[in-house]
Length: 341
Image (cartoon, rainbow, N blue to C red; front, side):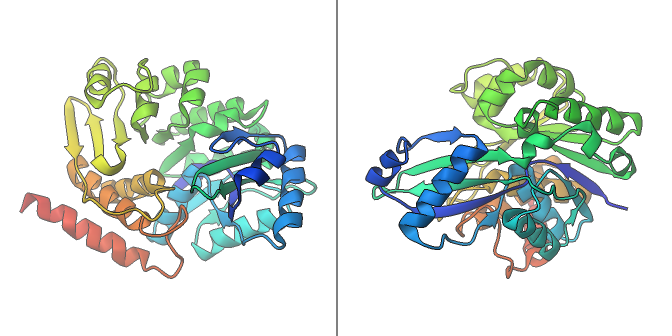
């Protein structure tokens, strides 16, 4: 039986050095972050291939996908649901799942383009991001195995999936309903502030019912009705007015959690980051793994901090496949357990 079922984006990412001149010729604004249609994305990809030759090998990504990857590598039976195309990118994504012992629970779609993104770095080290949802837009209730969800121990839902396509919100709703009907707890990972604000009814309804919500400070602020720039103290006050249990990552300042009537703030070791992409996703994996081991919320925050601190030492959103994740998790658990010594 799959212990944890995750639903999120099937996507791969490509990092590429570019320039202001090239970006503007492609119609892109340096430093921008945008979601574009498949057709435009494919035209840009072909132009980049023409300019640079063979592009770097893509790496798998997607917020909850990164979380599920680390959980599986830590030895937890984990499955992933998401829509990908039966193309080169889709097959790379599935192959990476297999390498991590993460079960891919959906069929790749013939004729569809797998979602992918470019991280384009210019001469000033400014990052321009372009993304296409691709086959993720096909997410619908008909493509989800609700029985697998009901047989699991925990469901992990990525808030970004609400925005994929015309039936994606309904698909997310069906997942929650199936989990609730089988008394399976679910965790709701927050998405961009625009998505949290744009799907207010969904978050207002299901965030209080979730085992917990997880996201960064800006996302949590919008969830509780504040501006994204709100301080942690302001978010903490608003959370106390709700029944929501939450874990909030604070970048270099560590993490905060509110469970029931208790609040926890856990600072982290200062580390010079090579790449902070995916730190929050992997933090969540460490936190969930620690809670499964029976650790307290405070100890689980420490485990999450240790794991996130390791991830940012490497480029990309996932730890190198050569890294011994079970050993990392064991060391993080031992550090956390010493908190009460």
